[in-house]
Amino acid sequence: MKVVVDPNKCLGCGVCEGDAPDVFELSGDVAVVKMDPVPDKYKSDVETAIADCPEEAIAIVG
Ligand code: SF4
Image (cartoon, rainbow, N blue to C red; front, top):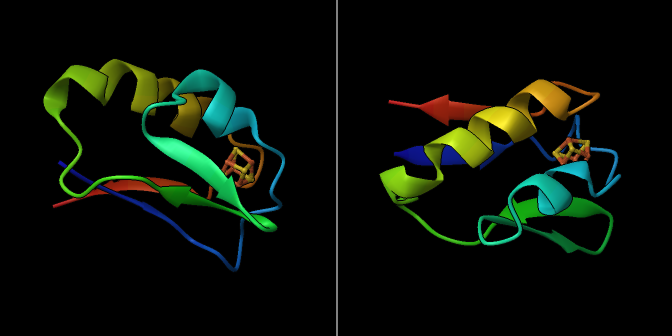
């Protein structure tokens, strides 16, 4: 799956990195996705991060 973070929405709070540290990391003031594609084994963690992100900045696309 492809996972994206909208840098215009992201506040850099780090919640997604806490939920899915293998998938997200902070780069400066925004979160970035560390891999493309993201293996399906991380889908549950990504969905948790999507639910927890205060800015709704994370999406699964495609
Ligand atoms: S949880 Fe959302 S706002 Fe916070 S760092 Fe991750 S993408 Fe950005």
